[in-house]
Amino acid sequence: MNKRIWLSSPHMGGNEINYIHQAFDSNWIAPLGPNVTEFENDLKSYLQDDIHVAALSSGTSAIHLGLILLGVKRDDVVICQSMTFSASANPILYLGATPVFIDSESLTWNMCPIALENAILLSLKQNCKPKAIIVVHLYGMPAQLDVIEAIALKYDIPILEDSAEALGSSFKGKMCGTFGTMGVLSFNGNKIITTSGGGALVVKSADLKKRAVYLATQARDEEVHYQHSEVGYNYRMSNVCAGIGRGQMEVLDRHIELRRNIYNFYVAFFTAIDYVTVLKAPSNDFVPNHWLTTILIHPNEKNKNREALRLHLDSLGIESRPLWKPMHLQPIFSSYPYYGSSVAEDLFEIGLCLPSGSNLTSHDQKRIALALESFFNK
Ligand SMILES: *Cc1c(COP(=O)(O)O)cnc(C)c1O
Image (cartoon, rainbow, N blue to C red):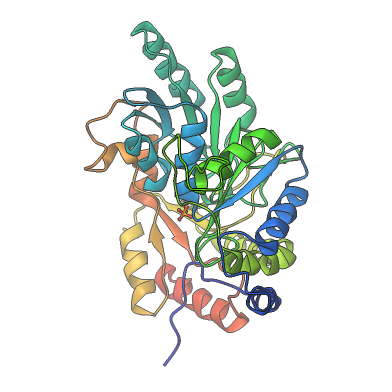
């Protein structure tokens, strides 16, 4: 029996276990400790910018804290890319704020700058200036950051950059996660690196980091007893998980290279099939981390479509997955405003994520190639 091939599964480098041993040997089994500090330092130097990193329990908690630090309150408006994972948008509802969803553009599948500006203008007309813009880099592909930043600057609205899928991606030589007023990373099990579960908030000052860590550790005042003047959260990363993160940082660039090889394999395979397109960087300004390779299967005379391919791969023990279903089409979010046309919706109908893990063996890749060949009669 062939083992199931996953979309993206954890890929340990080997050293992770040594950092975990250090945590056990020193009994630092807590939501603080040397691994947390060092993991934050590793991320800070990797992102190569004047930034500060707070390691947290998840990407979702990082988005929640980020919105709190940006001052989002009940009934505020927060603009959010529609095509994304629900974790980008849920924290808006945690705060009782109103999400306004924005369509994608077809080059990067991320936030459409034109629809974004329309949404801002209409909100301003209604005397309701949006408090933040949540931009996502789907599948590791950087959004059109220069255009979106210019709009954010023009209307003086902070960007919360959801870089959960884009650690290691860059735009015009600058790392994703460092563009926004705040940035978010995720180390969930299927992300490009994992701490088994975890995330980080990237901020621009030591003071903001201090405040993020304070809120993430129950907002405890400086007293000998437990005293609290604000609502706190239990959102800090544990020293054990951070040990995994330190080991993962040692292999991050190597794993990106391996994912790029898999992407190149898919690009080569699909060049001969004119009704399939692979999502590619629009120019050299965009450098994706190739977290997942994604394709569109356009309507064609052979009647091959996304769902048929997904089922075919599944029957051969190969996981693939439709693109993120846009938030404005989700039952929980369907009553909120949406700006744009049907770009995100159309992508969702015909798009598929293919197995892209850095731990795919050559045998796995051979199986995938055979499965694709049999489906496309190549
Ligand atoms: C994974 C992910 C998150 C959430 O991260 P968790 O660590 O799973 O909480 C947020 N946004 C996007 C786009 C993601 O892919």
